[in-house]
Image 1 (cartoon, rainbow, N blue to C red):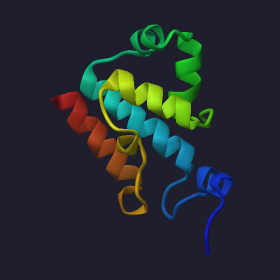
Image 2 (tube, helix red, strand yellow):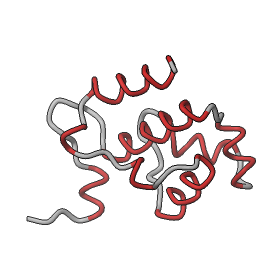
Image 3 (tube, one colour):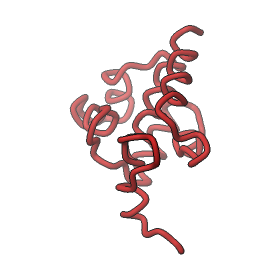
Length: 106
């Protein structure tokens, strides 16, 4: 059974209260931390407001990012859009927290 795009964004994974959009936002935050880029710096590079970035990367109920957002964020952060897309195998509360901790420590 194939999930619609909307179902993917709103689906809740077993053991995690977050949505797919929250997982993508978490991956963007991890990459921002790894690159040492703040929301303000990302917004300036993209010629958008800091609030625009904030709404897309916030922890709870983020505004889902479209393909253009993902491509723009990836360009500034010098990574692939695929780096922002979590797999179901990696989707757990501890997984993103662990990657974030590693990014902060490095």
